[in-house]
Length: 108
Image (spheres, rainbow, N blue to C red):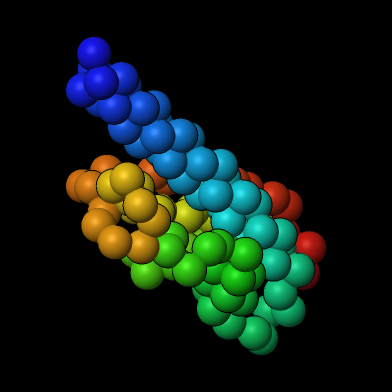
């Protein structure tokens, strides 16, 4: 009975980490698009997006993070791609990437 309980706990923990990665990816994309929408035209929009999107990420998720944004008409669109950790954040990543997307009207 103990192996079945341990296997269930491991599966639930991995599901929780995957769900938390979805939350982090969505928040990083929201932060990135917010910063990208407020950038002055002469500043580097993608750099501002990347910095804002990665600043609130836990260090275990920052290593495999890809955050960026681009302008499409009057919209600034951002994406945040995060790798899902396997059992313990910061040690091993499974080959699953979670993408968060966001868009906002350009303010400048």
